Amino acid sequence: MYDQIRGDALFILLYGAVMAMSVIAGCYLLFRRSNAIAPDVTPPIRLRRWTGLFFVSIALSHAWYIPIFFLTSSEDITQCDLIGGLLDSVTLFPLAIIVLFVMLQDSRRPLWPVVVMMAPVVVCSVLSAATSSYALMPMLHAYSLLMSIGVIMYMVWATRRYGHWLRDNFADLEHKEVWQILLVLGITLLVFAIYVSTCEGTIYLYAMQVICVALVCFLLWRVETLSDLGVQVAPAEGKVNDCQSSKDLPQATLDRSNMVALPTKNIEQLLQRHCIDTQLYLQHDLSLLQLAKAVGTNRCYLSQYFSSLDMNYNTYINDLRINHFVGLYREALDTQRSFTVQQLALESGYRSYTTFSDAFKRKMGLSVRSWMKSLENPKVTKSAK
Image 1 (cartoon, rainbow, N blue to C red):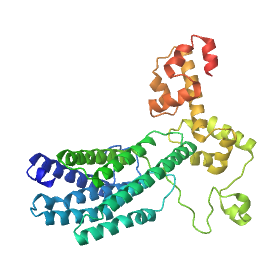
Image 2 (image 1 turned 135 degrees about the horizontal axis):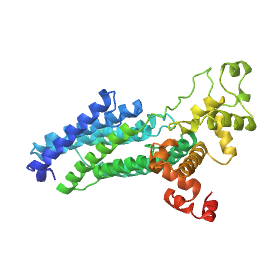
Image 3 (image 1 turned 30 degrees about the horizontal axis):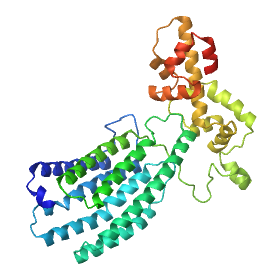
Image 4 (image 1 turned 180 degrees about the vertical axis):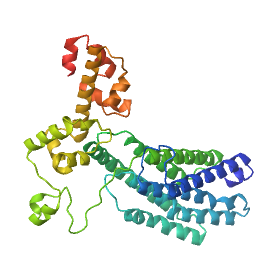
């Protein structure tokens, strides 16, 4: 296989370009503090650093296979290939899994399971490099397949949980799309599957480079446009977790904390006073934690209140925003003021028209355009409400 591309100038150029691009992207994430792609977004520092290291590992993965292009002895090529696989098993693959874990901001997941998962791969790679033999490759490929299935199952479950967490804590879901995490998972696993497969030929080698380019570009954009959601780390001993039950804490501890367990009626009145009357819901990046502080309770009590109404925080805020939009629209019609739907959506607390359109359809049962047309038919309008 390597003989076919040894004299292929185009492939060598592409190979070097991918390596250079990975180095530049990695150094950018590791050393540049400002955000060039989305200046108004503050990305998670932890995700930024791990992704930067992952990009550097992609470049290194290319670097330690370069000698193969110049070696002529099959024994030397085999040894170089096996050593490259060993180095990949302690850098590239674990970093890829870590990036997937860190993209989920609902909790700070421990990273030691990644070390445990990769340990058998490292052991097999060490033995293969020491013996200069591919005899253990079938076993390694079988374990890699099982590990990939396990990672897929966990990520699908964790991503689903992450989606619920977003809707329970944030009204603005722009650039927080959960499906993109699954897309990164799919691309990463595709690279891994091709890597450990027995595919040969120039098409295979070119495909690997193209997929690497797509992965680096997409991940770079994803990191730069994903806001830091400020996950709260579990409290140290002696500190109060705002989700901890108040009846389980001594009174002295409660006095030092900001935990306030309010009756449902009081929460309703406080939401009316501090959220609806002040139109706080128009703040596009308003979170459950910010609203809880404004009301004077904590996010868990407030979340429980929304659950008692058979809704989540996202639904509550978006219902207020859609009602606000409806009021603005009717007022604009009555006063014959010129307007655009996008402008009214922006005034209703939405940065993205797509987000507004989706929220509107969920509440009203019609698209924005269909609802506007239905105003000519009172029966349709009434049923849409």
